[in-house]
Length: 203
Image (cartoon, rainbow, N blue to C red):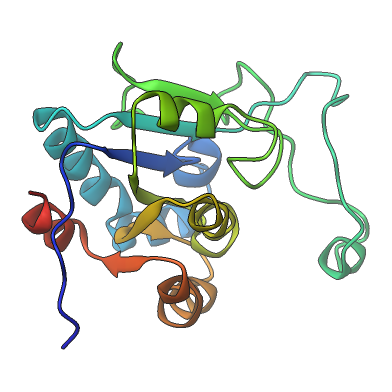
């Protein structure tokens, strides 16, 4: 078994990616049932409460687009072409889809980062906020494991942060992609722990 060193309580922040209605409360019964079965909301609620109790900063990454879609960028990819050039649904600022899921309300001490791209570090001041708070370790979770979370974790590692991926606070509706990223990709860039394991290691 891999020895797990402690996580410094001072110098740690919790970053949760795209915990919004567009991902968690879609009004598609099949989708929302999978979200409910994953336990991501329940585990995130408990983790956020535990972090706030320990004075660990909570940072929410969200995506919001202009109503005229002028800030939408759709790169040329095989997936995009296979979809008939439809791309992803645009999450418009102020809409139900863009709103934080109600179980995870933003508190006055929290930080909100609006990202223009999939990676929460690209085109944002996330790195500046973390360094201003003297953060060296990031607890990372959110939607989706192999997209926004993985891209953010890779960049955080390259920027010199220690990263802990909170496996029960991540998800992708395509469970195969979710589990593949947790088992085969993310361990190269971070420690992968449950929320209970991470909290137990906080020193």
